[in-house]
Image (cartoon, rainbow, N blue to C red; front, side):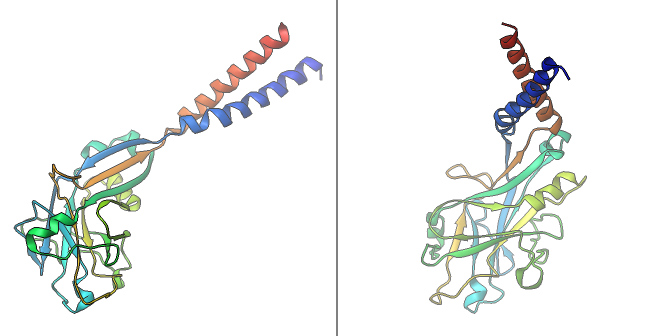
Length: 247
């Protein structure tokens, strides 16, 4: 093997190494898509509330002896704009974002959740289409003792909260006719602190003062695009090295 051939092969390896360490992190930045909920409502004791347009609520009533008087919120999304091949094939992660505001409990004289009296709010899928007329109280896929919760978050002080709903949204994106409704419930996993019920109060669909329920979907670049960038980076590195040797 000639010295020239050996040098060229070494430069090829060096060029690929440089490309993989400098181009890959930059090219792998996730693309983000967000969509707000199209509708939402909450139920108390199984009845749809007339104030669902100003707040969503979730409490821990069953934990302190009010079985059957739970407050459960339901949210629906339209993912038609996200059901395209470039997103479906490169889907990476999805999060549900809600804004908790204790002020939303004041009109009904409810006790807001705080860091000292938090409410664990879990996300569950529905076994039937979203129904803001008759309600979905019997359509929640709780599982045994809430084991089917997709994600759970402890809600205390006001602010933005996020639930990882990647597994659920992945199913939505690949289904031809997905039921894109979810339930927010505190029926399971809450602790009785002082025999006082507290509420997590979120902004509903269509909210303007705060963040409406929002689904954030992240994707990664197509593998072919990353490969092309790596080859380009390697080729540029080799060309520069050859020019340096020739001079």
